[in-house]
Length: 419
Image (cartoon, rainbow, N blue to C red; front, side, top):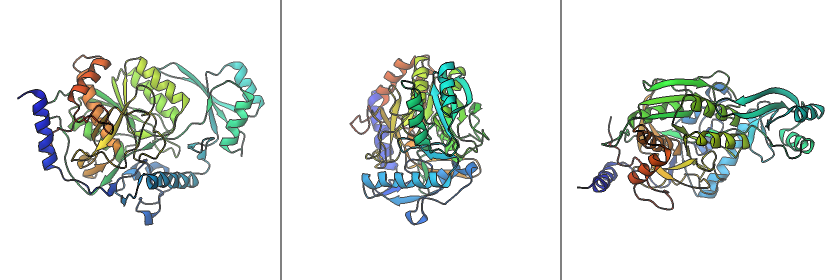
């Protein structure tokens, strides 16, 4: 029996064995962190404690999804609640996206632009460079009491032609479910390699080779990141590097933190980085992703859980990022799966479990959990000495059932279930 035939037979066996979630039952937290959604919408419990915002993204919730439009409306409601509960730490930017309050980012600052910004009322907080990627930036404090959106417009008028942005926030794109299922492992497929995880803090993983802190109070373990590390171990990844961009910061998951984390991954020579976070486009983060790719790093990102009517998810939508959606145990694309400007692969994102310290084995659902499994397959090939291009070509050869909804196909779908 040929290799492709064996893979298809394995897929058929998995489909026969898997338990499926009914098409109308959507579990997890579409769009990520949702500690503030109303209980009557079964979206989780209210929590104002910044230190457990990310943990609350795995609070074990479910809802009935009517259509893609409802998912998009739910996203807007969650964001409103999130910003309202964190006034003083989070504000709306000029595109009505959540961002760090009271701060703007100026790219490629020079002495003249900083002096003009100061004359306009914007004080310098920090002038620095994203280490490992060579991207210069300045953090500027907005005038006290001025809304962020108005401050952005005023600074852009003062500095025409300069790249100015808010520091937008990104949210995890997965949750837990009481439904259990497979525990992925690489059945007869190449294993090994190294994957970096930009998320919260990771706990309880014997594959953790290093962990960086890019937020106040980091590293602080959370269930979302720890579940991702568990999936990577099951998929055969030899070494994991974690970068905590949340810590205890109520404005954690911001673009600058993720950019710094990418720079740290580059300095550690991590070949594949998995990001299961979603947010709006940000010019600093776009540059960081491009610089990381120029150094040979494969960046893999989830497309989010806000449905097809939601705006394109970033970083999945940046050029060259490997964008991944999720499928359930029967190979059906998750109907809450978001979208990116392009789609590369699908991977299991439901009907599976992960081991989380203090909670044991928990059920998972969301594109958050598909991205690391795709990253594991690419990293395994790079661990064999292949460069990024050759590793992606090898992943294409493993992918099953390519389509408009799965990109070049489903990776890791034949992974053995069990333990």
